[in-house]
Length: 170
Image 1 (cartoon, helix red, strand yellow):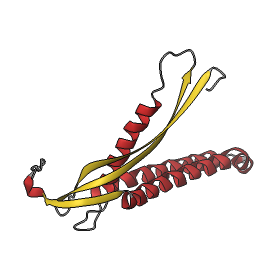
Image 2 (spheres, rainbow, N blue to C red):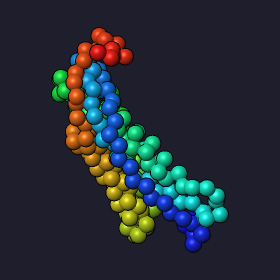
Image 3 (cartoon, helix red, strand yellow):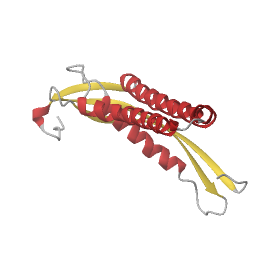
């Protein structure tokens, strides 16, 4: 709840980091420049002492965003995305669908009374519409993450996976 004593701080952060992309399909490792972006909003009471943590939180979120983008980016060698990362990304969308269908099932179970149609149209139909909007929003974020991984990940060079987790300085 925001009152007149609250202070809202918004911080936007973009950073370019050098991360390694490890392909689980072909076994190649490629160095990449990744641009992470984040916007964080923090609500703080004026009674709380100290500076806002919004800048730090935005930087941390931008690092997480960059790590996510490099994990779901296409491999430069085999041009495929990591199937495990794709499953975890798609599962957010699947759980939203499961939630919406569970709400529809609940509505059908409540429909045994004779006044179901009027109560459905007045109360439950707007809730079902809201849940559908949530599902579409989660799907749109998933699609936005996939498109961002194609745009904000630039590969520098490829190395063989046989060199191990630490590359030599040469």
